[in-house]
Length: 428
Ligand code: GLU
Image (cartoon, rainbow, N blue to C red; front, side, top):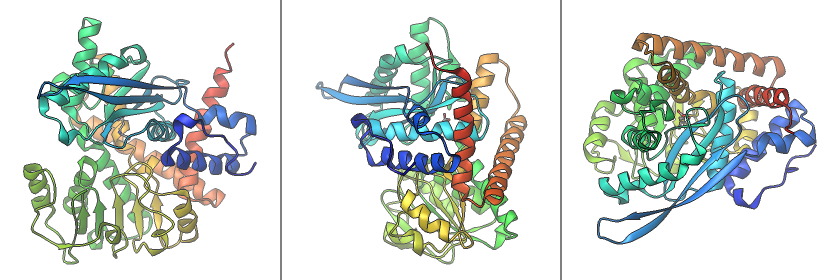
């Protein structure tokens, strides 16, 4: 079956959805999935679009647009983040939901994927407006979510407080406290300590694992981290203080900074906590954000948005390890180039690299359902055990079948989703 064989439902017409679809076609060809099964596996079970009117602080009424896409419910509830971003589309949510499905299946979680959010720049809202909008969003989602249907979590632009408001809105409606409706909520509401750091910690664990596999000493390495939000900042701190690396480049949406002698990551982290961005951080040379990705380093971590490693820059990357902390940072065209460069650039694909977040979300959900809480050590040990198993499975499959790490990782996920859907059969 040739590439580009699947149709695109116009509601999903978005470059990120097209990218997820193309990636799936490559995997389907590899797994020789029959044509009549492909659409059934790739298309989301449902996509919800809601209008969200709120009173702005100045007394006016403004309508925002919210989405949620649930990819499949074959193995349990869907699971995934809620993103607040000014250009969010339902097609992007669909792609991110599909990637969540492969990710959860790869690491053995009993979930399908979901993703949703609101088309808004949260920085343009007051705290009060943010609360109204968040509550309104959960209110509109009530018919489509439950702890056994769809469990939300933070993503770009959202945080623990927003999960707390979601939980409260759902619980008021239910008439009792339902902590297990969301993960990544405040610890005082049943959140797991370390959930916020979990994605970045997982990224650091996997980078160390990859370097060990390549017999490279982390303490001799340099790193560049693109994105200084939750995932990027925790990863940069972990690489600097746990792995002993020199962080030579960091960036956020305002600035890209480079210093071959190493940046003071503790100072950068403090600066962002106080000022919100890196804009006025006094260290490092200001460089073009595109250029930052192609500067020499041992470890490159894209930890921001999709589609930043493209056919234009994939051949120019000068890293030994590409650790995809973001979802979908590398386009299929870039993959073709990186496949040729597999001996130079070791890729830790996104579905593996950033899976620490949803793994700890799963722990939070299980503990919430059982009302039985674990120690921090138990959480961390179990996280690392799951990551280790998934890393080993990806490396083994890639070696055995002579395929890229991405094809290995995604194909394990797709196989498991397909097996569950086939076992469920088609009703009626
Ligand atoms: N938003 C995160 C992700 O993309 C976490 C999702 C979750 O914890 O459910 O993996």
